[in-house]
Image (cartoon, rainbow, N blue to C red; front, side, top):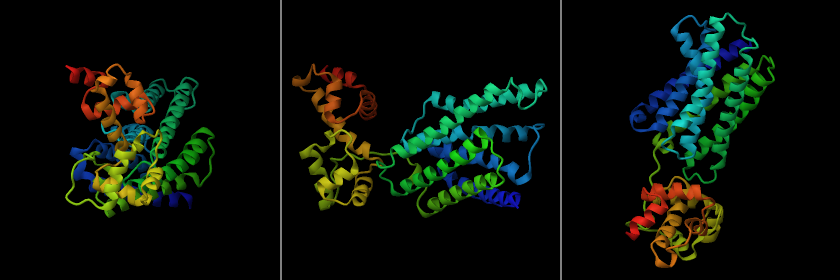
Amino acid sequence: MMDQISHFFAQFAFAQMVIAILLLLPLLANSQQVRLYCSLVVCASLYLLPNIFGSFTLDNLFAWLIFIAGNLLPGVFYLVCVSLFREQVKLKSWQFSLATTPAIILLVAQMVQINLNLESDSAILYPSKVFVLILDLGLACYALFVAIKSWRNDLVADRRIVRGGVISIAATYIILVILLGQVVQVNWSWLNPLEMALLALLMTGLNFYMFRVKPDSLFAKPVNTEVNEALPVEDAALQSLKQTMLDESLYKQEGLTISQLSKSIGIAEHKLRVLINTELGYRNFNDFLNYYRIQYVSEKLLTNEHKTTPILSLAMEAGFRSLSSFNRAFKMTHNATPSEYRKNQSA
C-alpha cells in the first residue's frame, strides 16, 4: 500500500517538474536564477525516477547520472535559496564549489567501493559518508536560514508566499527525511510516501504561483529605481514616504523594519510594501533603505568637514550594521569602494 502511495506521488511530482521547466524555458537564457532553479528541478526529477521505475544498478551512464543528480540536490537547493532569497544575482565560485563538494565526494567513494569490491558499510567509506551527511544537513539548514532571515524585508508579495511554502516544507523535509531517515536511520514505512508527498505539494504550489503570476516576478533581477526620480503622478502616500525619509532620516535607525516605518508615516504595512515595490521598483526593503544610506555617505565623503572622518564612522551613522554590508552596497551603487570614490572625487 505504501509503495503504491509513494509511486503515485512520485509520478505526480515528476509531472509537475516537467511543467515547471516548460514554464520557465522562455526565461532560461537571461536569468541565472532561472537556470539554477531549473537545475534543481532536473536533479529532483532524476532523483524521483527510482521511485517510479524501481532501483537502478550502476552499470550504465544513465544510472550514474541519477546517482549524481540525487547527491547534488542539497547543494543546488542551497544555491537557489542564496540566489533568490538573498538577491545575490551573481554567485561566487566558492559557493558553487561548496555546493558540488558532497556529490563529488560520494562519486569518488562509490567508484572506490566498486573498484575495491567493498561493502556499502565499509569502515573505509564511513568517514566520507558522515562528512557528506553533515555537509548536506548544513547546506539545507543554511538555505532555510536564508529564506527565513530576509522574509520580512521581501517586498514581492508572491515571492513571500513562495518563501513560506519553501520554509515549511523544507523544514519538515530536513526533520523527517534527513534527520530521521539518514541520521537516526529509522525504517518507518510511511517515511518515503511522506517525502514524495512533500515534493508533490511543493512543486504543485510553485507551479500554481507561476501560472497565477508572471514567473519573472519571482526570478527577475532586482532593479532599483531612483527614489528621487519624478513620477507623472504621485499619490499622497508616496509623497509622505519620500518626505519622511528625507526630513526625518529614518534610514539612520539601525535595524529599522518596514513595520516601524509604516507606523511612522501612517500607512498600512501591506500597502507600504506594494508602494515601495511597484512605484519605486524595489524588491527588498533593505535595498530601499540602502539607497538613502549610500546617498547620505556619498555626500559626506565629498565635504571638507568629513575629509578625514573614518569611513566606518560614516557607515554606522548612516544606519549600516557592519562595514562589509556597507562596502558591498556602496560598490553596487558607485562601482567603486568608498575609499576609491573619495579619492577619485577629490582628484
